[in-house]
Every structure is written in C-alpha cells, then in structure tokens.
Image (cartoon, rainbow, N blue to C red; front, side, top):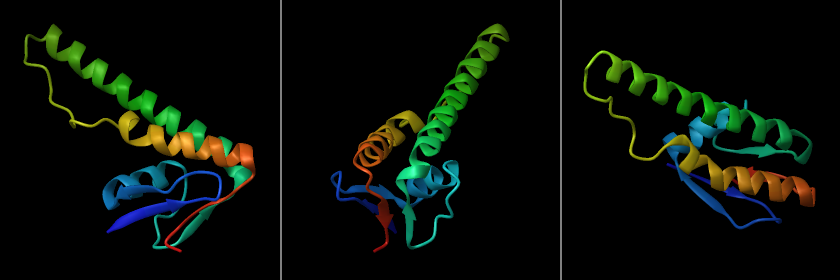
Length: 107
C-alpha cells in the first residue's frame, strides 16, 4: 500500500505504507486509508516530526558512543533515516500551512 498525500499548495507526496504510517503516527494521526491534516494543526505536526528526528539521531549517537566505549563494533541502523524520509513531508506541511490549505490522503 502507498500513502499519497495531496494538497492544492504543494505537489503530491508518495510514501510507502510503513514510512507513511510512521510519519502519521508521529504527528498523532491514525494511519487510516483516508485522512486530513488541517492548517491549524500543521505547526504541531512539524514540531512533532522534528522532535522525533532529534530523538532518533540522539539515540544513534548514544549507541555509537556506547559501542565505542565498550570496544564493540558500531551498531547498524536503517540505511535511510527518519530525517531523510520526513523532510519532504515537513516541507509540504510548511507550504500548506503558509497557504492555508489542508493535506489529504486516500481521496
């Protein structure tokens, strides 16, 4: 399954189901087949995504430092980080908030 996010203020954004589900859960939305993000909630959504990105990066840095201190090999993480997956969505949220347009999916 794919999530296709649409808005009148930005181009369509397509995410694979696991990535779209994760992003929606981070911003407090139920990853249903259909949904909407209103402009008045977009600032909080951007903040939530940025916090999740920072948390992930901090956890990775901590894991690397711990492994180094213990003389173990560095842990392996996903090849594509949350930051790389979420930045296009964050950009879409900011554009749509500025334009006062909602984002929909599954429509």
